[in-house]
Image (cartoon, one colour):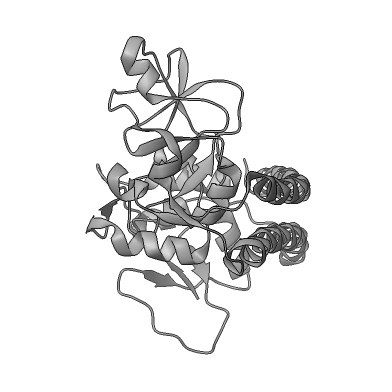
Length: 318
């Protein structure tokens, strides 16, 4: 049987129950079956997750703040059905690509784990003096609360651009124009540490290093930290992305589950070990080597995803 969330099917909340003979499903979900003499259940699921399927879901959904796809409307969605043997062949092709994507994703996860393990080995198991971010910061500033748009002089970074794994993602950005003191206060330059101060409790405290030569602007939910010569920002970002540090950040965050906050004063008080800069830079060299392998795996994922989308369009498009 197939289950879907009427309010979240547009983001892929649909799945085939193939794990056990019987399961209990939340009443938020609609459950249905298909005539398996005509269509394979997994073929329907993959269609509904494909871009052609999502386009039909958007057309059939109703609502204002949150769209909803009623079961009757789901029944109005059209799909071209090849013979069952052809459906199986297509599913095998798509599953093969998904398997390769998972393997590359696992490689990236292992590389990230390797960096964290090396950090613990080099710094948390050694005796180095303890300092705070505030003691090593030349400048700590909030971003701007000015509204951004699709046009402007500078790229405008928001909290969604800082990923959970400590990297910056520019796939979805806006733009903004500022000048004068307002510009200088929220302008970010290569090497700045970016800290997501407001988010849901499980995501608050996301941290990354700004790696680009192009100057950009940060939104008010981000804090910019410029460090003095004693600290390499890549080293400090690695510390901030440790599991133990993230748990600590969640513990000091104030506010509700959906709107937790860590202010600049709290950020400045966070303690971390301060080894000699030469030792930090040896770790950073190791990170750069790992990042090269990470980049190759990420590129492969993007190529495989393009192939998957192309096949899905061929299989499920008009």
